[in-house]
Amino acid sequence: MGYLNVEIKAKCADAAFVREYLIGRGAAFRGTDHQTDTYFNVPNGRLKLREGNIENNLIYYERTNQAGPKHSDFELVKVPDAGKLKEVLAKSNGVKVVVEKKREIYYIKNVKFHIDEVPGLGHFMEIEAGNIGVDLSAAELRNQCDHYMQELGVREDDLIEVSYSDLLLHK
Image: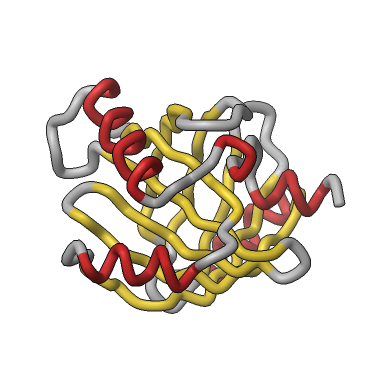
């Protein structure tokens, strides 16, 4: 079953402000995850294996590159043996790029927030209004994303159009 996120990625000059805002609004802190995202060569969309101390998933997604809130249609598979899966996918598809990051993970209801530090790229934040476990339309998810962008003071020139993998590939 596929899911939908309406999401943004933005440069984050003040992680402490974002953190304090989230904690002040009762956000559930899930922890700090040290993640390795291995992107594989695929003919359509993006396929990545996320290995972390909190999240371990194979994720396929389709998303347009654009600044501001964008739809991301995705499939998510929990992975019990990431090492073996990575070996098989690397042999069959080839590795496109690997992204290492330190990620703080917070939730307010169905909205997931990340405060990320990506070596070589800098500090970022993400807002993902998603429909996992809730029956919300794309318009409702967009409204949630817009609300938190405004609350967190995300400016248009802070928005990032592409994924960390694209940023690393074009660096």
